[in-house]
Length: 249
Image (cartoon, rainbow, N blue to C red; front, side, top):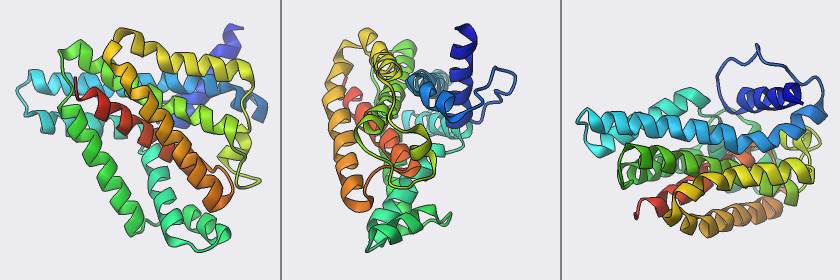
């Protein structure tokens, strides 16, 4: 049991971060990789909380709030390698630039970034930085809020995986498939758990759900379902929505 949990964590860490996790037990098949989705919000909370800690440290050192927020973003991007942001940019380029589903999917696999992707990245990073700079409360509240927003963004991934089919027969979305009820429920509970310490943050939940469902509906219409890039985009969008609500205090 403990070995399976550790392998799930290793799979989630290996996918969502650049942290070395080869020393942990590893899954050897696609089924194990798929069952690890419950750990995505947990890893997401760790990523966001790290950024929140950098934000709090910058403010304690006397940095202006917006500058401290950009350092926070730099820390999380270094931790993740910009994994979800890359998905957001590819999704924006594909949805905005292709005329057919096949062409959209082709564009999304192109490593080059276009104007739609660049604009999406600028907006997402600018909104996150501005919201982080406006988070109320002391250091602990800022760490919890940043962690909770990141956990909700990763939790939104699970909803789309359960709802929509993969747009391609290969790729990350196809490999993950539809999560079984047990890991899905565990992951969603973990995504909501940080909100228990942030009563005002519950207001973010409807907007995160709306953003995830809206992007999911767009993905179904544009390309017929999910890709790994769409999952990355929904994680970023969910986090942006959550931080925007939490910044109100």
